[in-house]
Image (cartoon, rainbow, N blue to C red; front, side):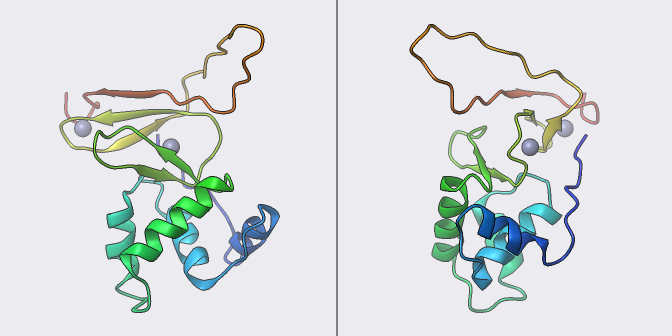
Length: 139
Ligand SMILES: [Zn+2]
Ligand SMILES: [Zn+2]
């Protein structure tokens, strides 16, 4: 259900460069964390995990890096929570499901992402499908 996105150590720098992002230390660390932990973490979770090994990182830096990575389409922001964003290094269209009991955000990869027709003149740049309910572990 949650697939780890495989990327060789060091390959994340190439991806950042390809998206026009200079691979500075904190940017690489945040991106690497998201690749290694496809749990759709919040910015706070990322910060508290990274600060253990990286004393130079601040909460503001994490927020700034996430905004930068989102604006360059390296990472996507998932507005499944009312009060906080979740982040995902998988930027392909896929459906998210949040369990209100355990709080886990699942990727529903086996569900076909629907094609949505819009009136002419409109151009779709992004579509998100976010569901909430009970996961199999909690129901
Ligand atoms: Zn659950
Ligand atoms: Zn996802």
